[in-house]
Amino acid sequence: MEKTRYIFKFYYIGKKKYHGSQRQPDYLTIEDCLLNALKERKYIIDDKKSGFEVASRTDRYVSARGSSFSFESEKKPILMEINSALPKNIGIWGYSKVPNDFFSRYNALYRHYKYIIPSSKIFRRGMTSNNLNEMIKACKEFEGRHDFSNFSKQEKDNEKTIRDIMLASLRLNGDFLIFDFKSRAFLRQQIRRMVAKIFEIGLEIITFEEFLDLFNPSKTYSYQPANPLGLILWDINYGEKIQFIIDTKSQERMNKFFLQQEIKFSTKQKLFSLMQRNNISEKGL
Image (cartoon, rainbow, N blue to C red; front, side, top):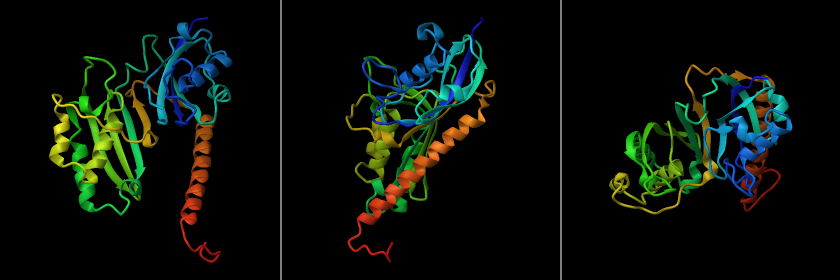
């Protein structure tokens, strides 16, 4: 039978047991789980001959809602059949046929990441409007073409570090700081390092001028990136030429899992909030 190439949309939660998304020897990754499920359900026999590839790689603890991957198969996809072989914290929810020379990584128009964190985790005593305005102003500086060598982890010598950022925004939504970044491609740890410096602006650890100095590639700065738990690969956009078929049951599976996690962690949050009180009475609950 003739093989057809497909692209898939999937989500995953960056649990401790997953050592990032990309395959690596001796460690369990998101890609391993996908390949194991596809082989178990006979969509892939030999992964080297299938053209299997994932559009974006993420570090340990980073999650995704709209990542994508592609491969060739003789079987027409039945998403719930594949999902039944995946853990609940990983799931495929949409797919589309694509040309045989299509690659989910290189044909992407842009990648959209969100970084979400409770404002109280950064500002223990409350955030002023001036703090927030300075952070929003600094975040906008990322837009356009820049050398991001001081906002990334260098993986090899002479690596190209110039990138075009289509969108870099920050807003306060309730008690949460929400960042949005869009670009065709990002460097390793780029978003987490950009976010880390925005936090330093808000905390007045660095001045706005010192922040702008980070765009100077002739200088080198060493610092830790922001926590990966807040980073989400929100979507990978391919334009109007790719029309994804959304599988209703698979989407219900995804939303049910997200709801269960929301209830689980909101309960834990309430528990630890109560445990911090000195005088707890049944009336106070």
